Length: 257
Image (cartoon, rainbow, N blue to C red):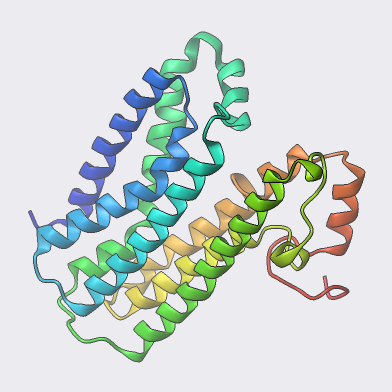
């Protein structure tokens, strides 16, 4: 089977159905967040081995996806362990009532599967390409990915340590990377996917691949990331002050917001 689009769609569909059934058993739809990174790893490996060419760019982009996906899945698992369903999914569960079964299937799992397909477009382009040589753009893309990965990993680690300290209960995290941006993890997430796009650019069809980082950046800024999380802190005086003094996304020095 050489159609990378079909392979991706098939594996994503199977994986998201598995996650849905697991969520039903656990009564916890937020496990889809743990599955997010794992899903990309499955897609990347499925496409790589189906094609069977193992060109350097294919190996590079697969390695980047595996490192990102494994770290993210492990972090979310550790963050959510023993805490029950995430507040966003719990709120939807309460709002949806008896329609929870079909609405969670379509609006959580199948919707995230569709988004996963769009974000994975650079992977598809690389695996569909016969280009075997690494170009300067591949190394630039990997460097951009690394910066984004470090922002996301360090930001997540700093936040976890902050929340695990009982003395910080009810306080707003404003230290480390969080001093320069209110969402270093989301900024890093967007940046690393722009790096993946740069790597994929060497495989051609950049007008298809660029849909991925554009869509992800928009989602993080306007839909499921920054906008949704900050709504949670509406009316919090400390967070209002944080907003006035700190960039929402791109890291900036104090006073240059």
